[in-house]
Each structure stands twice: as structure tokens, then as C-alpha cells.
Amino acid sequence: MAEAEIAKKSKKERLKEYLKDWTPYRFQRYYTFIAVTVFSLIIPWIKINGAHFFLLNFDNKQIHMFFTKFDMQELYMMPFLLIFGFLGVFFLTTLAGRIWCGWLCPQTIFRIIYRDLLETKLLGIRRSIQNKQPEPKGQFGKKSVAFIIWSILSFIAAANFVWFFVPPEDFFQYIQNPSEHGVMMGTIITLALFLIYDVVKLKEDFCIYVCPYARVQSVMYDEETIQTIYNTHRGGHIYDHDQQTKLANTQKELLATDDSSECTYCDACVRVCPTHIDIKAGTQLECINCLECADACTEVMGALGKESLITWTSYSAVEEERKPKFLRFRTIAYGVALVLSLLGLFWMGSTKEYMLLNINRTTQLYKIKDEGQRVTNAYTFLFQNTENEDHKYYFEIVGHDDIKIERPAKAFKLRAGTKSKKVVVLSTTQVLSKDTKKDTPIPITIKAYAIEDKVKITVQRNTTFVYPRYDILQEHQK
Image (cartoon, rainbow, N blue to C red; front, top):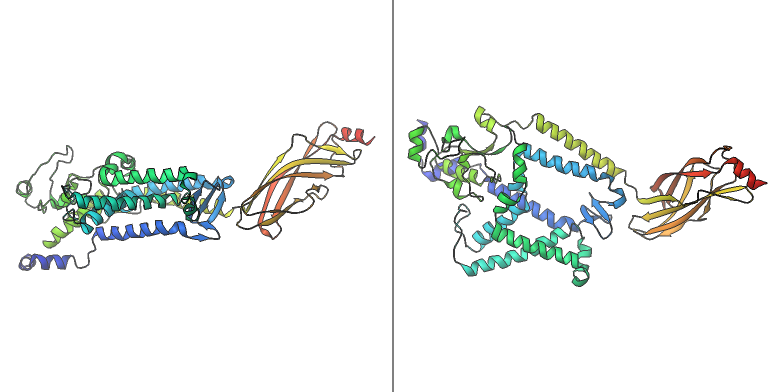
């Protein structure tokens, strides 16, 4: 009875009813692409307390992360950042296959802009977004317009990439004198030319032959990894799974093998595929999980009042006719490792020092002065003001009242972002050791700080004060 009622409805009515609450994956990807593009273009311009969200600044030898500045001497947190990045790739791939490729990769976004927006929607070079197989011929004028527009966008994209290394506030000053900033200009031109060649000529061959991610993804898959999958139990076996040979070339041949097969052999999934594969042959290296084939199949099967034969699921879920398992040992393990690395990253970031200090001893261990009544040690202190405003600095010796600061006698000023090398002399008039066999190194702690903010802008460094052999000291006293 139900089948008879469905048959009475027109194709348009059946499609409308089935797709009533359906949003194509293509539109969901477009929304994601817009969000990623807007974020990438805007985030380099946002500064909080003079720091960017992410900036690898070679000019000032700084890295900005989460609106906090770190100097090169503070890159002890980089291992946590690298670990987090690699674990993030492993986690995403294990959980959802090549979701990065289809939903977040700049290469995919650029191809969508050029092929779907410029060539198809804007200039009409291609007839339909649903048909990506035939390359349009002729139309030299329209293709030239598309090429020019994309060339302009390529230079904008290249500049946007450079903004994560040269902040926009510096970029637009440097670009006024291009001859003085050859490396930056060369990077922009080289990257823009590559994007033009990649998007216009190389196309999806970059994903198939160049990108290394496709080669490493297979070792991260398991039976629960979410992928774009054609359901052979419903659609029928069009390809031999082991030999990848075609078993049927038409719907008639398919039905002769299995009369319950639902695939109409319309090949809409093949025509829409940007990497030119047939998803009905199973998981393939070239599939980027864009799910355009799932959209195409949903429209065709929806007209018949049936669910799509191509879905975003796992092989185990298809075999056992259930929902995929997102929580399993591998994803939980990667998730825990990700959280731990992120906590480590934030913890290391929380230990950031708002000034830098390196202490080096001079070649002469000590000097005995005033006829053996005073012992001095000399050091070289390298101070750096990492803040955006000028500060006055000084320091003190923690826990050793018998060791005094002789030089410098007063606080000194450092401009924002500058360094200063100071010769520091510490002395004592007290007897610190009576060892007659060897000199005595005495551990001391130096606490340096900004006069204006002793609580926030302060660091501590450990060094030693060398006290001479007692018999040598006595000789100077005679």
C-alpha cells in the first residue's frame, strides 16, 4: 500500500517530501569555507596588548600565540605545539578520514572558488556544479577573465599567508619600498604564481599526486573511521571488491546479478566527483571526503522516496547496520593525548616571563681587594625588555645579605623591545668560607624586576659567587 502511494506522487513531490529537512553537504562545506576564509583574513589584524593570535615574526625574533608574545629564548613550549599539531592530524584522520581535505584544506577552498564560483556561477564557463567531468572547451574570453580574477585573488591569498610572518602593520610599510624587502616580495610573488598554476592547471592532481597526506592517511584508518561509503548491501556490487574489476556496466546487468539492487546506475556520483573517481568501487586514495557524490545520490534516490546509497559513515556501521562508533580506544587515546599536550602548552605559556635575563660569568673568577677585606665577582647580565612600553630595571640578591651589589649602583631604563648588556659586580666583606684546599662556589639567586611592576615583570636566575681559598685571602691580609 505504501509503495502504491509513493508511486502516485510525482517525482517532484517525492523529492520535496524526502528532502524537506535535508541540507546538502555542499552548502555545509560552503559555510565552513566562508568561516575559514573570513577568520584567515581578519585574525592577522586583531591585536590584544600588542600581540597577535598567531605570528611567527622573524624580524623581531618572536612568536605570538593566543595573543601572547614569546621571544625565541622562550620557545621551550614549541615541542608541545608540534606534538599537539601531529596528534590533531592523527585524531582527525582516525575519526573522520580526510575531513581536512574536503572541508578545511586551502587547496579545496581555492578550487571551489575558481571552478564553482568563477567558472560556473559567475561566468557560466561550466554548465553545472553537479557535472565536473568534462573540461570546458573554447570560451577563451571568459577563461581569460576567470584567470585574471583568480590571479588577483592569488596575490591576496599570498599576502594573507605572509601576514602570519610579517604583521599587516609592518607589511604595508615594507611594501612601499619593495627593493628593501626582497625576501618578502619574492615570497609573495612565488606563492602567488604557484597558486595560479596549482588552481588553474594542476587542479585536483595536487590532492592525488602531490599532497603527502593522501599517502599516510591509510595507516591511520580502522573499520570505524568515518568515510564516504557506497552501500553495496542496498545498491548492489558494481565492482569486485578484491580485484576492482567492474561486474556491471548498466542497471540491467546489475539487476541480473542481484534483483534487489537499488542503484539506478545514473552515475550522478561520478559526474560530480572533483577527483574523477567512482565511489561505487569502494575507498580510494583520491577520495577527499567532499561528499558531493552523497549529495548527488541523495537527490536521485530522494526522487524515488529512498535514502541515499552513499553516506558518511564507517564500514563497520554499514556491515552491522548501525550508527558509527565515535568513541573507541584509538579516538579516546588520541583525545586524551591531545588534551594533555594542550594542557602542557597552556601551562608552559603561563610560565611566560615578561623580561629576559641571561647571566654569564667573566673569565676571572674573583678579585681580592682592600688588602683582603673585600672579595668581588664580575658578571655580564644581558637584559631584554619584551614589553611594549619602557621600563626601569634593577635586581637584588635573594637570601644572601652578606653579598652586596657594587655595580650598577642604581636602576637603568630600557626602551620597549630593546636589549642591554650590563657589567655587574657583586662583593662581600664577610668571611663566607674557611676552606684552605679549594675555592668555594656559593649558589646565589638573582631576582631582577621592573621598578614599575615588581609583581608581574620579574625573573629569577641562579648563579654562583666564587669565594677564594681562605689561605690565599689571609696572604692578602698580611
